[in-house]
Length: 136
Image (cartoon, rainbow, N blue to C red; front, side):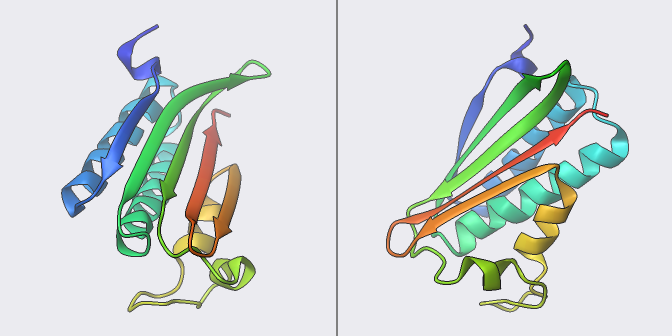
């Protein structure tokens, strides 16, 4: 097992932390030999989710790990915060919906870029988003 195969947890408190999450996800994606296209998709989704954790959740954590299932390897990234939560998850996942100045493609776009996407949120308690990208 290499250091890239271990699970890592990073705090997300600043824009620099979002950059560190991107770098960590890229390292793990390379370690499991995701294609360049799939690396880019995963890093893009992780960057958006880390930014959402910071901007909408106020701060939080990213947990990134290499996973294996049915002979495949992949990368799982979980983003969690203790922010206000999402009132309407389905609306938040729809394209064009935004609570800020963005294009409203963040959550829905992130979901399309990965193989597995799970979002749980409770008002006043925070949000957790878990994504997985598998090797082909």
